[in-house]
Amino acid sequence: MGITLEHDEARSLIRLEGAIDIASTTDLKRLLLKVLEPGHEVRVCFARITSLDATVIELLWTAQRAARCSDVPFVLAGQVPARVAAALADTGQDRPPDWTLQSLLPSLHPENAPGESAHGAA
Image 1 (cartoon, helix red, strand yellow):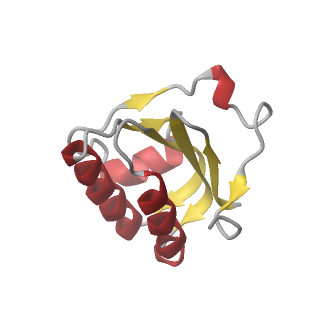
Image 2 (image 1 turned 60 degrees about the vertical axis):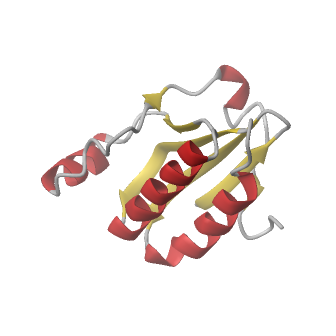
Image 3 (image 1 turned 90 degrees about the horizontal axis):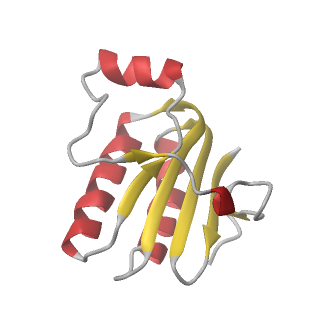
C-alpha cells in the first residue's frame, strides 16, 4: 500500500493505494516534483485508494496548477472508488476544477509494468 511510480520517457504514472493522508504528502510531493517536466504526461491513479485526505487533495490541486503553467498534461486516472467519491461529494470536493478522470492505458496496468516504491525513488 502507499504510493508507487512507473516512469518512462513519455509519461509517469503515480499510483495511490490504501489510505492516502497527511503522512503520505511528503512522498507524494517528492514524486510530483520529480515528474513534473515539460512535455512529460503525469497520471495519478485513484483506483486503489480507500480514503483521501484533504491535504492530499490540496497537494494534487497545486500540482495540477503547476503542470498547467508548465504545459505538462496532468490526468487523474482510473475510477475513484464509490466510498471515496461519496466522501468527497459530502465535502463538496467531488469535482475539483479542471481535473480530468480517464481510464488507464492498458500499457500502464500493474501486471504489465512493476511500480517503483515511493520510498525507494530518488
